[in-house]
Structure formats: structure tokens, C-alpha cells
Image (cartoon, rainbow, N blue to C red):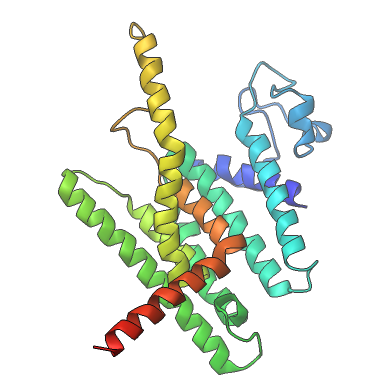
Length: 285
């Protein structure tokens, strides 16, 4: 199921930035327009069987097609097992939706450096709705009691506001220091979406976790690009380099997935310890 959904997510990543329907027309070759036959449209396996090349022409199928289908399949399998084979349907439903939206955002932002509002703002609204329907998402009892639902929605709203506001001010200060735009508003709205699902603790973790992931991934690539540029000094190079703008959304999305699917309990307990120590110190003054 995850691989099939991943195939649809690929369609969304390719068509939504171009304002095309994700339903019609059916899958076709991006280069020559030839309709893709069903046996060449099997998730994961068709890309491997075709060796990354279209059967109708010389078009090279982006590795992203294979990667998104495989990643979605693995994430769905992990969610299914983590939810106790749907023994916890509220987590299962929420996690499937949350991860699917983030995969689309990661793919679109990586390729176009834009994040459509339908996923950031729309996703934040969905986070409030999910929190109201499933209070356990915010650590409350999952019972049909209105006070539990209202409290969960309030926690979600707090996460949305605190997360997006924190990233906004980090970007504003960085912009003032560097005299140029340091952070896109799409990233701020995306973090609001993540905070609505993960709470303020998850939002703060994702800010710094995303920055850490970006550093770990991009720093070696920048060094490698620098050496390659020197080795090919007589040729034009558009490789990753110092001062070049890079999308931050994919790293925020990855950090959000890590938090929601595995690190939530550890991160939340760490924040609780910090707050408890803070209260204890000031209560003794």
C-alpha cells in the first residue's frame, strides 16, 4: 500500500507545482507524452526493470520516482508495525497522513524551492482537526469527552503558533545580520503545520534538528563541490557551493518524520526535565 501511495505522491510532486490535475490525464512520458502501460507503472519494480529509462524514448526516469516509492513503502510498513497492526488506529491514521504530506513537501521544495500553501496552511488546519478528533495525538486520553478534545486542539494551536513564531524570529534576526533574506516564509508556515501535529516541543526540536541534518548532509557536499570545481576550473559549474541558496523545507520535513515516528517520547521527556529543573531553581530563590 505504501508503494502504491508513493507512486501517487510522485504524481503530486511532479504536477502540483505546474498547477496540473493529479487525477487526469493518466500517467504518460514527460518527454514524448506516450501513455505509460500498466506493467511499466508498477511501483518500485518497474523503475528497476526499466533500469531508470523510459521504454518509449530515451528519457531518463528521475531517481526520485524510485526513492519516493521505496521511502513511502518503508514508512507505511513502520507505521503499521508501530501502531500494533492497527491496534492504535488513531496513531496509524494520523501518521499515514502526516508522513504522506511531508514526503510531498520534501519532494516539491527540493526540486522547486517552494512549498504550496495547500500543504503548509492546509496541513496546519488538518493538525487542529486531527488533534480534536484524536486527543491521544497530544498525549491526552483518547476518550469522547469534549474537554479532552478542546484541550488537545489548544495544545495543537499552541504548537502551531510557538513553532512558526520561533522560526520566524530566527529568520528575521539572521536576515538583519546578513542583510539578505535568510529564510523563506514557506518554511515558517511549514513549521506551523509540523507544530500543529507535534506540539511546541516537536516544533522546537524540528527547527534545530532540521538545521543539524542540513549541516551533516550539506557540509560534506559543499566541500566536495569545492574540490570538483577546482578540478574543472575551465568549465562552468552549477554544483552546490558556498553562499548558494538551498531549500530548508526538506530538512525540516525529515526532522519532523524522525520526531513523530520515533523520537517523540525521548524529546518530550527531555523538555519536561528542563522545565522541571527551571521551575525548581526559581522556586528556591
